[in-house]
Amino acid sequence: MYSTDDAGLANGGLFSAREPQLAGYRPVPQSDNFVRDDAPKHTKSWWELWQDGAFTIVPESNSWLDAWDCIVIAALLVTAVVVPFDVALLRIQPLGVYFMEKVIDGIFSIDILVTFKVAIIVTSEVATATYHERYLRKPYDIAKYYMAFPFSQNMRAGWFWPDLVTVIPWELFITGHDVRSVRLVRILRLVRMLRLVRVIKLFKRWHTVFGFSYAVITIAKCISTSLLCLHWLACIWCDLAVNIELYLETGADQQTWISLAAMAKDKHIEDFTAFETYAHALYLCTVVLVTVGFGDLYPLNILEVVIMTVTVFVTGLLWAWVVANVVDVITNMDAYGNLFRHHMDELNVMMKARGIEQK
Image (cartoon, rainbow, N blue to C red; front, side):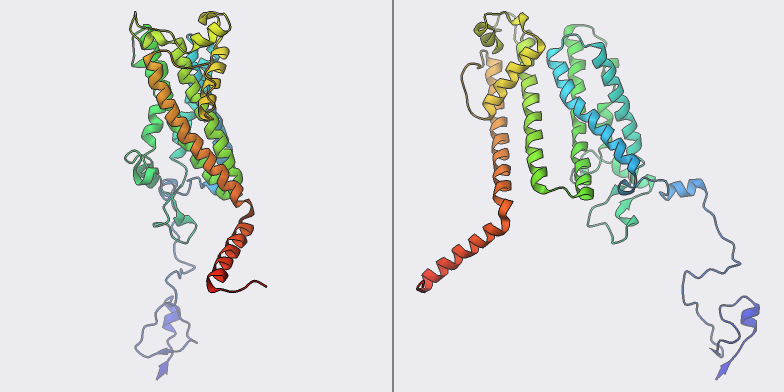
């Protein structure tokens, strides 16, 4: 038996009097998201919106963040090139280099604050199919992830602490003014190299957005890694040539590899400029990398023998990695042709094994 109830409409019910309903049965709303027009609407405050991540920056939808990433990458590349050269070769730091490092410190400090406002992509096991839930958007979750134990969650979380170490003004904690104290401060600036991992993360994100060819990326990665590794090794050998008295005891044989270059040119070591010393060191490391070995420059003291052993081992692994990647790229330039030839070879082997005559 059906009945109508006009009170349902008069009392603000969900069904009108013209809609039939069973007697004694209370109708259930068809949608949990139903909101009456005259119901009071709750407006979130700025604090609630901030807690919900409404002001968090999503990397894929913010062009300003891309511009800031370019600035950070430029600062990182300058750090990777200038700081090792400064520590190894420049006894007195030029004023321009000093101000440049302070600007870079400011960029890195701002970048730490910006990281707290950028949504973090969660792992595929946690991520869902919706767009917003693919990110950690709430400030508390971002801070918890960024300030976790260093290098946790497969090297993805806890990068706040290494970033913090790179901007610490170490000169405020070392009060000595002797040569070793000043040099220790300059060496501690090399911890900025830890931020180079940020470049890898940024390029991975840009690769996802722009879709560069993997072959181009592989070749660029091999070239950039080789040049950067050669630069760092050359700076180490420059440091041995210029500051050997800091590593060997007085009275020990303090002749260095640069003495061979000086004798070949009939010059004193002090007559070499910083660029000339670096050029000879880069030449030495390049010869070792490509395993040519002309024999004109070689280690002359026990410390250089140890460093050369490490250099040979590192460059050997690097060169093997470069050759393997280049060969892989060349091989896969005609992937379908390689697959066709592989299948034809297997077919010929099968025909020969089955005794099928070729006609």
